[in-house]
Length: 116
Image (tube, rainbow, N blue to C red; front, side, top):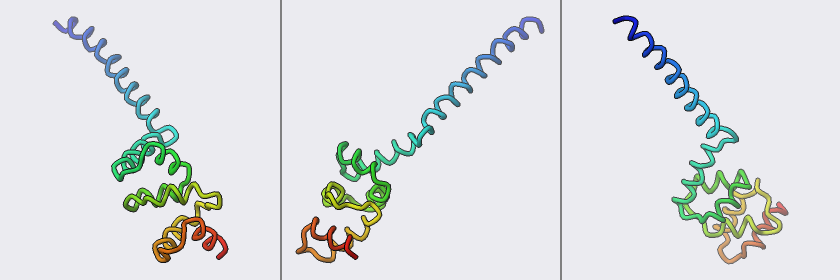
């Protein structure tokens, strides 16, 4: 009886090894270049109301990405990013200035903040 069980155990070991190897390969692929984190962030932005095109643009700017993830949907964010004078490190200053000075346009607000 023992002889019959040994071959089964010998077959199970390589199968378990292969399954574990596949799991590690999949995890390595997802974690490569922060793909898993990017997928999570994209889903969060999508749930906040950003379109796929907006998400692609936001992902190019780390500070804007941080802002978009930590705040509600902001219709002005994409307009701010697309402005020719946009500086990513100033995103919070732009938003604050625009919210404080409602009558001033976005481009003008960006210029004023950049001059400070």
